[in-house]
Length: 187
Image 1 (spheres, helix red, strand yellow):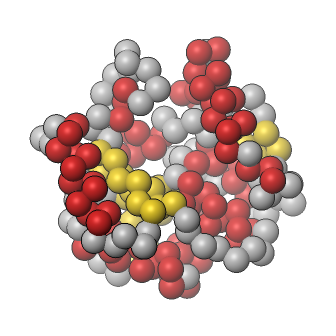
Image 2: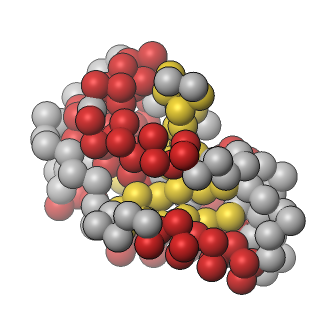
């Protein structure tokens, strides 16, 4: 099922999709520092596109990086932004504080894209945003795993059994193979 997938192709698909462009315009209008649409929103969009399924973004993952906002202020800010569009299930997180999500001893991130590079799965380490009117898309670990419908841990989560346990629990909980039977899960 492997397909050649490029960042240019992904940008084209995003630009052709009214729902995704609407989300990107909303996110751009917030003017948050180092702000991106990320993770499952993009992975689901791309797997659906590759498997010719209709896309309906259920959860919309947005990150930004602002170390001047406290954790509680970041949460309040995210809730305030989400309330502007209550029909959308927003997940808005300041990556200045997310290094402690899985382990308290993790070093702080220095940017949103560093945080994305440390997501559990290579196929989830995706980010995009509007720069002016053009889509900017980044696949931190490339697009081959995503195109091959392969789920495997990023180097961050392949480094030890402690991290692999978190990865395995997450993959089991998500149960993606029910939606995309062609998935190959590693690790």
